[in-house]
Amino acid sequence: MPGLTIGDTIPNLELETTHGKIRIHDYVDGGYCIIFSHPADFTPVCTTELGMMAKYAPEFEKRGVKLLGLSCDDVESHKEWIKDVEAYTPGSRVTYPIAADPKREVIKQLNMVDPDEKDSGGNQLPSRALHIVGPDKKVKLSFLYPASTGRNMDEVLRVVESLQRAAKHNVATPVNWKPGEKVVVPPSVSTEEAKKKFPQGVEIKELPSKKEYLRFTSVDA
Ligand code: BEZ
Image (cartoon, rainbow, N blue to C red):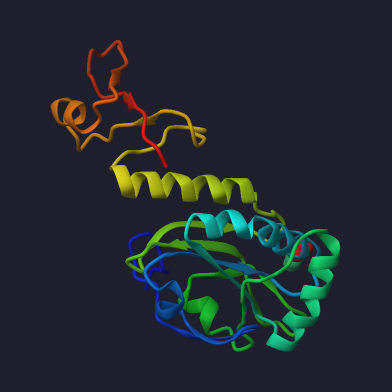
C-alpha cells in the first residue's frame, strides 16, 4: 500500500504526547497543522530543529497553524530532551506537543519511516518527515528528508504562505516566491476570468510560443 501522501486524509490516530493524549483530527480542528518527525531524542540535528521550530511557533500561530512534533522515544524522554532544546536555542520555548511512538505504529501510518536508520536495538526510526495538513484534514504538502539533513524553517513558513494564498485566492506561487511578490494565475483559470477575478491587473508574459499561459497578478495574504 502506498504511504500517506498529498490529498490523503490524515489518519485520526490517538497519540501519547508531552501534552497528554491527542487525537489528530481534534488537534487539527479545522485549521492548518504541521506534523513533523525526528529520528530520535538527544541527537544533534533534531535538537537544533526542535529549537528553531519553537522560535518560529509564534509565526505559525499568527497564520492559524498548529505544530505537532513526533519522535519515537517515550514522553518522559521528550520532556528531559526539551530542556536541552531550549538551552541550545536561546529564546525558544517548546510550547507545542511532541508525540511518542515507542512501538513504531504511528510512523508507519504517517509514512515517516526511514528505511536507512535503525536504533541500537535494530528498531526502525523516523525520517525527517513533515506533513502540512489543511482545515479539511487532508495532507497539502509533505517533505521527506534523511536524518543527515536538517530542515529549513524559513522554507516551512514560506510553503505555508504559499498554500494559504493558493487556497484563498486560487493562485499558484512561482519559483523562489516569497510573500509580497507576484503570484501566478493557474492554467485552470482563463484570462477572461482572471481579469474579472483580479481587477488589480493580470500581466501576461510574451513567450516564443505565443501561448498566454504565464500570467502574474498580486494578492494579499
Ligand atoms: C541527528 O539528529 O543529528 C541525527 C539523528 C539520527 C541520525 C543522524 C543524525
